[in-house]
Amino acid sequence: MIRALRAQVYTGFPHMKVSSLRAISPADGRYAGKVAALRDIFSEFGLIRYRTLIEIRWLQCLADEAAIAELAPPSSIIKDQLNRIVDNFSIDDAERVKTIEATTKHDVKAIEYFIRERLGDGPESSELKDFLHFACTSEDINNLAYALMLRAARKDVLVPRLRAVRTRLGTLAKEHAAVAMLSRTHGQTASPTTVGKEFANFFARLLRAEKQFSGVEIFGKFNGAVGNFNAHLVAYPDADWRAISARFIDSLGLLQNSHTTQIEPHDWTAEYMHALIRCNTILIDLSRDIWGYISLGYFTQKVAQGEVGSSTMPHKVNPIDFENAEGNLGMSTALLSHFAEKLPISRWQRDLTDSTVQRNFGVAMSYTLIALESLVQGLDKLQLNKTVIEADVSAAWEVLAEAVQTAMRRHGIPDPYEKLKALTRGKPVSKDLLHEFIRALEIPEDERKRLLELRPETYTGLAAELARDI
Image (cartoon, rainbow, N blue to C red; front, top):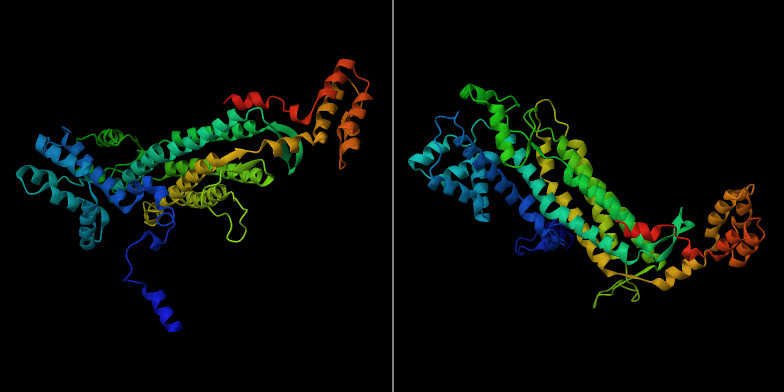
């Protein structure tokens, strides 16, 4: 029996159908539906498609350069043919590239051979084919492909989902702007705030982090084997290759990095990853805080029909969305940190350690996306429990010690902090105890009246105004 089980472990189950249940990564298994928007960007298909786009756009760029006299501008037929290769790139095309790669043992060269096949053997296409991958090193293609992938993921997927979380935070901030809530600093009762103000804090933090993430400039290099245009200059010594490269990179919506080795040094990539880490960190803080407020009973969660909170305790409605978000944000941040620390380091003019690391970009982005989807879902489930919140804050008369001792300072009463400390620290504080102390103070009567009218639930400063001002 044991021998039979070992055989299954080592040989697998070849008779089983293809299923997401057999995926090694939860991003492609359990959470596959949540990361669908990233699949065509970061998958092997996506990488092949972006590489194909770069090869063809470079060929088209060369054909438009007057300095490349041997390459005439393509006819409208060839132009359409080239554009169709990019615009209609399919999974069958990607599989053909992989078939070619099985022979070439080189993934980028396989792209060149695939495009040659698609161009056919006509007189015009034959001339074009000799300029495919002209003066390129593989990293000229790869760095631009990854740049476009990260740009697409940010613009089309991550920023919109970050914005969706932030929008919900803004709605909650304004909806609960004036709902008084007891603060806890160091886990102890502290000056009251409002529920809306606490959501507004996260809204403001996420807005700033989102802007920084969106603002990271994306660079590309296209300058040959070691970054010096060596082969370019030998073939066309009179061409302004720095300008040609800059125009090509600009046409892709990227910025030129003019000083590189064989690889683009990945400094902007590190900035991108660190900026996303900042977003992740803020959202981990949000997830933990809401988890805590649910634990205190400040929020209940909408119950989904048929959902089970515990396999043994029927009453439970667990804060699973916020736990899921926290866990996945942590996974994402671990990978993003590695990318940021590893990728800018490369031995001499190039080593290959970046290649296998970059292939995991989509994994890190997937974990962030899974977390964002969970946060949106979790925030939508929240229901304020005013009864619990009001009972909590209204019973905490000790928090008014701050207000009383600060008013005493204004009126010149000596040692106000020490007097309130002796009255309140480590002791139960009631309304009667505090009011007895206030009545004995030598302060103007109108000031005494104002202090006696204070309640913990009204001692919220400008919290409501700040909550609305986002």
